[in-house]
Image 1 (tube, one colour):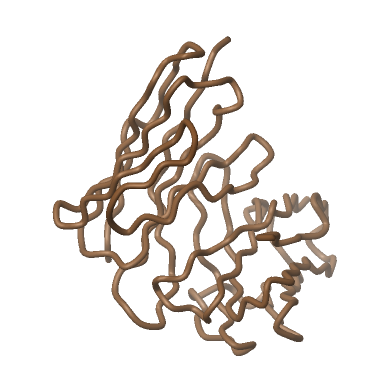
Image 2 (spheres, one colour; image 1 turned 60 degrees about the vertical axis):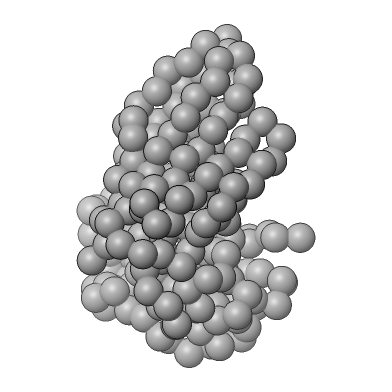
Length: 111
Length: 115
């Protein structure tokens, strides 16, 4: 099956710093989503980005489908950005619907 | 509104108990999913319902029994669970059945402890 690898596994930042999280996947995808899981377990949708670039406030994401990677940029980080960031993909087309998650990047933003 | 509501938020049960987890969405989504997440691990798919029919069962033990009474509601019935079943159980939904391109939206989860 498809492999999804995220890096780095852990990241500690001072408030105000910028960061880049990476997601590599081993095969073509029709769906790629970035999530933020807060300390209470809620998975919050950040981006649906199987290809191209999107921005939402301090966050932006880029997926280069032909090279099989996606990047999540966090600028001017805040303590509320702390948590686990997951990349998840669906491989293949049609009626699959099975999101495969990477292992996540645990981000800690210190005040 | 992209809200998926799960109840209860926390559940403690013994190995001989029977309990149910509930998930609701009122977004008109036609696919609903159960995921299981162990501590410090990513979520893993358990079941998918598409247009109220079970379409994917990821070889989940029979002590977990899903049910989709209508297009807005998804239940997970639990019976004779083991302590290793303690985890965060997440429900998700997507608009047009389980098509690969559909965005999945997640609830806040039920944190289950089996004693």
